[in-house]
Image 1 (cartoon, rainbow, N blue to C red):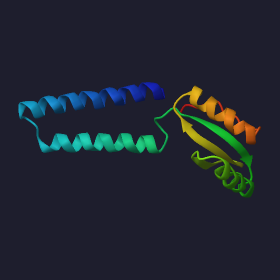
Image 2: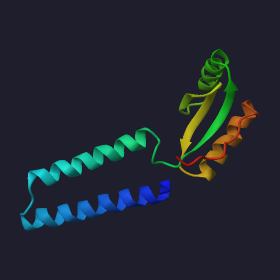
Image 3: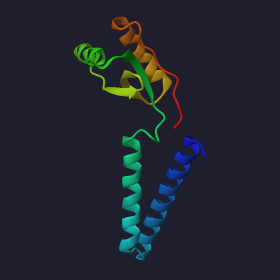
Length: 129
């Protein structure tokens, strides 16, 4: 199964359970065990979003190389911009990734501003997990 299929299935499941829950609350046949299941599903969705395993987001790569230079790039970038940065290790290099953009247009707009200071920045091809 690809990630889009899983994402759609999860969203449909959550919507279906929400609709079912609303119908049960309105009819008065709601019980506590169903509530716990719904809260578990919501927590699972939050954890998947935090771990970036369900979202297809775009990032900007600022640097790839050794750790000390990567940390230097992050400090320098944070002086110029107020965008979330993270350091990712992919053997054998450390990569400085910028942002978490919902679509390619948002990423391209940010890239235009970032390229004024960091001309080597680029948007890597997104990978499916």
